[in-house]
Image (cartoon, rainbow over all chains, first blue to last red):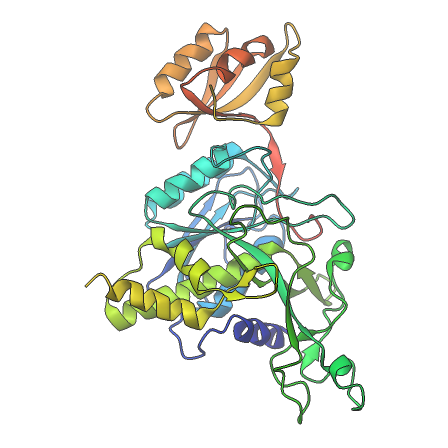
Amino acid sequence: MWETVISSIWDCVNLPRTIATGDDIHIGFFDSVYKPPENADITLGHTESVITSDSTETNIHGANVTTLALAFASEATYSFYQVVNESGRFGISEFAEGIARAIQHDLDLINVSAGAHMEGCQGHCAFCTAVSRCLQAGIGVVAAAGNAAPDGPPERINCPANREGVIAVGGMITECHCTENHPDVDIDDPPPGAFYPSPVTEQLADMTHEAPICGQEGCTADIICIGNQVDTPWRGNPTPIRDKPDVLAPCYTVYTTDDGTETFTFGSSFAAPVVTGTLAAILSEVAAETDKTVPADQLRSLVRESAAIVDQSGAKKLDGTRLLNDCLAAVSSKD
Amino acid sequence: MAQYVHPDVEAIRDDPTADAMVTLVIVPEAGQVDAVSDLVQQAGGEIIEEVPLDMLKATLPETAVDTLAESPDIQALHLDEELEVLTPGNP
């Protein structure tokens, strides 16, 4: 199932299949792991734990996040900053400590699939302050926008995603509407090229969409996907505010639980590494083609301006091909 | 005054408990770490940790929180607590 999921995400974000795979790009992950996922073929940078824990993986979250980025940037260098404890929580001090270490490690990008809503923050809270130091150091920052709780009140954009300069990522799904568009045709539900994300992590059952997810492989042998695909913001996204989130990306992944069951999970946590991995691949490609680097302080605007409209709300999704072209144009204009 | 005061700190500021102490994470304005350290001590508090990125962790009387919140040398005030983050099943 993993290959189907990654293929669907890859095509959804319109990333060329022939693109570089992150060579010479260094990414830092602020999450629950300080060692790479088991069996991962990875170029390892730094492994740092800033929490009191004997576990290399306080929960599965960090491995799921990292594995998604690896799918797009397999040749990048990966550094890990374990800031999330066994309870799925982190402290401001630990986050600041991790950021301080990352700044010393000459990273290109960091991924923060974590955050908290800070009522009234205009970019001045401790989380936003910490990541602003990364931006000042020339490190691009990608952060999860946050998730609304099932049946809970509307969620607001989390910090540090809310910080100016940080690429805030929300979730989206490309739904398959083949069966309802072709009521006279005998089509399986889901069509062969689509899939229902099932089973799904129990607490997230209410956050899944009714329609199957497009696998980008053709609905059937005779029916292509175009016309049956509906890009839809994920129902668990926080309420947009000002220009946030900056971009949407597929927000699902599949992992194997302890009892061997392949289980889906959703969240902006898993949309962020899609953007991080895509950016790493693109930055690597730009460097390979031009021997130039895209300035970190331009990344957010490049991602925003190249993104593709999803629906009438104005929400936009990551478009890897347009982003690559815009990055190439940006470095060329510096000549 | 501080540009960001977390609502939980604001609540203490509005209704401090006499004789109670609170531990805060303080983000000083750029170049004002020493000035904020002095302010904390003048307010009857103590710096218990210098946090990376020029932040401070301090214990001080709840009745002194208002003094810090009014200081132009302080950018942000938070409680020293762990925060929930985005994990599966913890949306």
